[in-house]
Image (cartoon, rainbow, N blue to C red):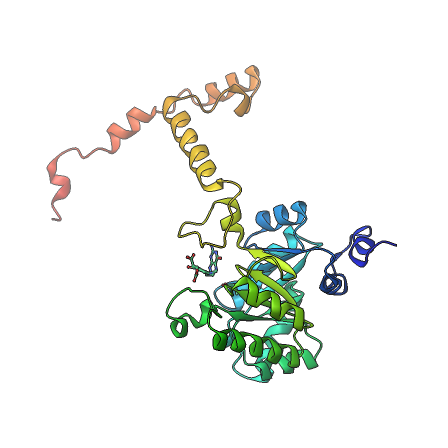
Length: 298
Ligand SMILES: Nc1nc(=O)c2c([nH]1)NC[C@@H]1CN(c3ccc(C(=O)N[C@@H](CCC(=O)O)C(=O)O)cc3)CN21
Ligand SMILES: CC(C)C(=O)C(=O)O
């Protein structure tokens, strides 16, 4: 018998990789693959590559909508999670309103780091699929004192476990576990119903999540220890643009095949119509100051 996710993949429509199919991963059939996309072509590349879920967001609600719409155009058949800053959820009502707007823009799962469980519960009651975030939370950076592994002491590891249980009780369907020691992440994954997406938390979760800029080599900053890089697209882009500069400067571009033709007869008629028009040089000389008197007004 085909496994749930295989069945659904034979009939690809919007959300071929549905939440139901995704939740079956909890049975350990295979690791889910997650990455980020902030534009249409990266989303298309992720979908063509077979990524299970794309996480996309912007700097504010309006920007997030714009990003999610582009990502949905690029990846019509892939599950999308939208990260929303917990600060944007001023109230329970606002949380629902924002979540609905993001779902209208094309997202499937509301992804939020640092949101208090009560607000997640409000969303879950309205059947909004939610993904929480535990371990190192960049959005709460100040409290962690910068990026670091979280859960390296028994107490801190237990706190991560408690956070996951609170998200589970609030009705979330998944959690991103960021920079938690692999052995701790494994023990917690064994004990929660939630899908656990590992970002640097080892192999024994339900999926692996790496930023697309790290995978493709377009990260302009530091590559975190957990990242892996398969291409150097930034270098490729610089090479392509550099070659264009060289070709324009040397006259190698454009060639005949880049140019639009006009038949000889039409061109001859056009030239005739210009017979009495001054040349560019005439016009430039004509517009040059005749004498310094022109600058009287200074
Ligand atoms: N390109 C990119 N990749 C990411 O993984 C990523 C982002 N951006 N932006 C938001 C957050 C920030 N993240 C980070 C950033 C740095 C570390 C970091 O410095 N990690 C340590 C290992 C920690 C430890 O061993 O205690 C490192 O040495 O890389 C971790 C997560 C993950 N996220
Ligand atoms: C997707 C986002 C919330 C993330 O994982 C991060 O910034 O670490």
